[in-house]
Image 1 (tube, rainbow, N blue to C red):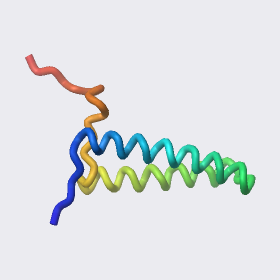
Image 2: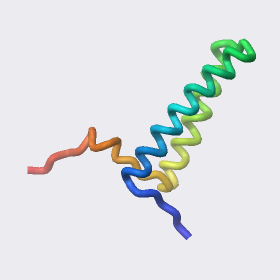
Image 3: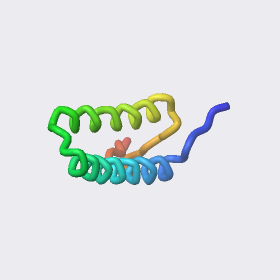
Length: 72
């Protein structure tokens, strides 16, 4: 079975995911006094999860129509 989210739903899920992970990283960094390298690793790991979901075509973002190519 292939599960896919629609274009706009994917955009909304990605936006919510990024916002939650940014605030989560800020909270965890302040709570545990994490260094820059650990913070960078957490950021790359969370983006890797997002990239994998796009790569397997579960998420199908259109980036809110920002990069539409117009054919004439």
